[in-house]
Image (cartoon, rainbow, N blue to C red; front, side):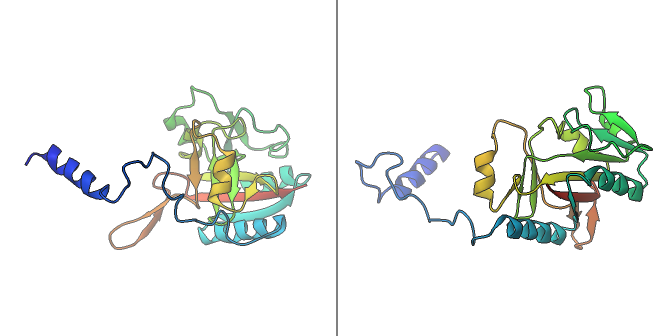
Length: 215
């Protein structure tokens, strides 16, 4: 029996109990997964997001829109950053107080080698998922190219609360365009070897700081 005949035989056996007149899509709707687990108000969703981000070893900060420039400047100073990558669409006022830090524009000429010499990157996000502690980037104007969030060791992400926070992955998918380059981030980049020794920064930033901003 050829490989082709084996595969077709398995398909026939799998379909043996399907009525011949059943059209594609005419079967059960699925296992009935919950769209969201529990009911929360916006404040509770933000709290859950912060808790799960911390579980993934992200550093979480809370501030107001008015205080954001000072907070970002303080985070960069605490890191000892001398340079920071700035996406083209990052709101101009966000880094207004980071006067002693060189702001490097995200351009096509900014190679991975050049990015490796930059200390930090500051971006916005597309959406943040409370139940999983996940930040999603979609290369929007305030996020820039995927490359700039993978090479520098220090990534600061600004999340606007409550408008950018959702409870669940299904809710996030409703907001995202699958044709865009999506990056899903749950904590700093990390991996473990066979001895379960955790190593951070292998394929992304060693330090992820998330700033939750309310009005």
